[in-house]
Image 1 (cartoon, rainbow, N blue to C red):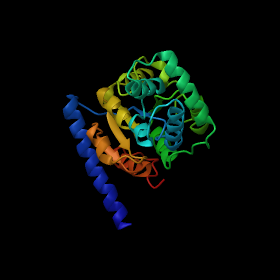
Image 2: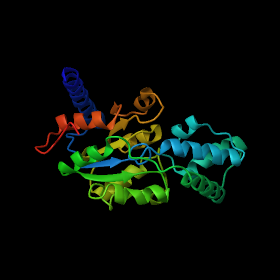
Image 3: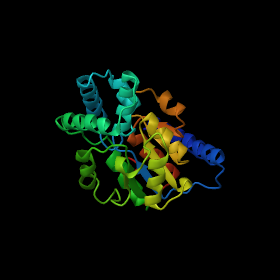
Length: 260
């Protein structure tokens, strides 16, 4: 118990300092959260292992070399843009949108045959505590994977706002451009200093930072914390539970149950 209290207090101090740095860096006068925008793959669902396998299989079938590590590094980028980047680099030519869409359909077929991804540990309880504060929850993803997008409404009913959902088709430029999170704020009706982003991927962190949101990375994958820090994450947590504990101390609520 003593170690738990010590850990939570340490995270409280770290988060307080991170918020102060965020305000100074962006020349804001306040930080008053009203919405939390979640990425999907690797944040809501433990779907990245399946995505990585599907990418490697699909690209190999197309004669393109791609490692699972590259899949994690490109996580957050729209599928078509991932194909244009990696295949274009190896084939030494521009990949048309039509070509990329055809390859992406193949990747989606492979993904759909893999076991269904489970929820990330702790994310449901985190969202419940967020809703109790009266904050809006949205989802901003570079994915166009319908099988996952359709699950959100059922798995997070009463938590995620259906009106604050941004996916690949909603923006011209995907992550790491700030456009998806700018669109998310537009749908949520918030400004950067009123918005928290929860990400797990380097490119997603870069996009959220570029949109001037307070950016929290929860490292649910195999990449080192340092990569997320280098992209500018205001804080990096090892799990949703530790993030939930810290938010409960910084933004207390009478109905919070931080032990969830």
